Amino acid sequence: MTLFESQTLQQDPPKCGQAFTQNTFQSTLEDRAGQKLKIRINDNRSTWVSIRWESDLTRVSLHRMFLEAPTNVMEELACYIRREHRTLSPTVKAFIEDNRRNLDYSWTVKPEALEHQGRWHNLLEIYDTVNREYFDGKVQLFITWFGEPDRRNKTRVSFGLYQDTLRLIKINRILDKPDVPSYLIGYVIYHEMLHYICPPYLNEVGRQQIHNNEFKKRETLFHQYDQAQQWIDDNKAMLFAN
Ligand SMILES: [Zn+2]
Image (cartoon, rainbow, N blue to C red; front, side, top):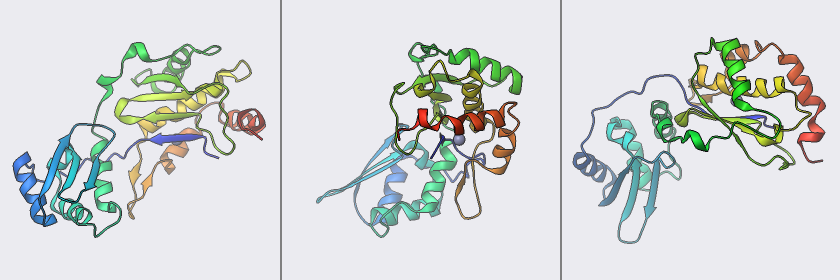
């Protein structure tokens, strides 16, 4: 069962290669891929790499970050375009992860679209309390409810998630119930705030360490940590179907 999900990223600064212009990027990638390409550079935050192999040409859509890709990343990307790899290589993935961290799309969040007031709980009030108590009120993130109050999943549920490029915490409406104590929601919010405070990092084999040791250590500092764990344990029946 997954209680939390995260879309956060690691802390290391990106390794910047020499920046390409769009033209030099095109010729470099075509050289390495050994074919003509239709390249589109986008500033889209959901698609980092998209390749469509068509009969007459290959269409490549890449995030702007690739204009600063180092040689090894360009090489691996070219292998993928030549279809020598079936999936993106770890090097390219790590490059994307490294760079994503620095992307800030929080300006696209429309504050009026955020829903703080649930039927039973006000997220902003709980967030402010947690922020004051644990972070001196210094953390600045958005927060909103998501999902349906009665949507239950048989095997897993995310109580909360954190979208780092939006600086946005989302809390599942299944927790917006009168019998869910506000400290439990506070605990979930605290957990998501920790994703901002303790970002994941890549370990030596290139794996993302999301709930890393530092994260786990800080998580237990939540005053009602044991109580929250116990509550989750005791209320599985309410939260999960079956
Ligand atoms: Zn988490």
